[in-house]
Image 1 (tube, rainbow, N blue to C red):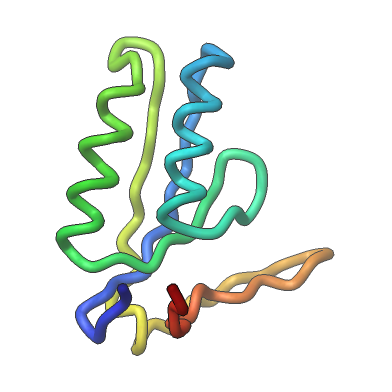
Image 2 (image 1 turned 180 degrees about the vertical axis):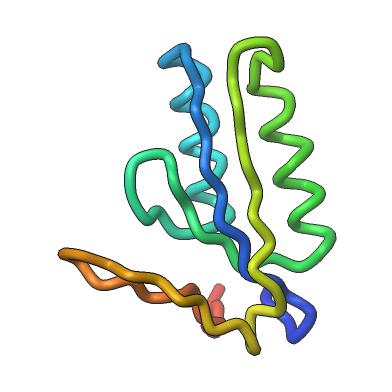
Length: 99
């Protein structure tokens, strides 16, 4: 569930082995929206961020793989300056979740 304390994160990864890459990709699909190959945007509170980091850390080979998490700031206030050529860029917004 999203809250006013959420931040917008850009997550980029370089995973050398296909099996580990798929695990990272599938995990990130559960936390954010895919932007392009190996790049996601995620709107997360502190608890979900820590959960995501812990899961991803288990899948990575820390000697071969690399993952970056860029904190863009408070999700409701951030206005990312993004130049997009081709498909437009849309920051993740808070949405109601119907269960």
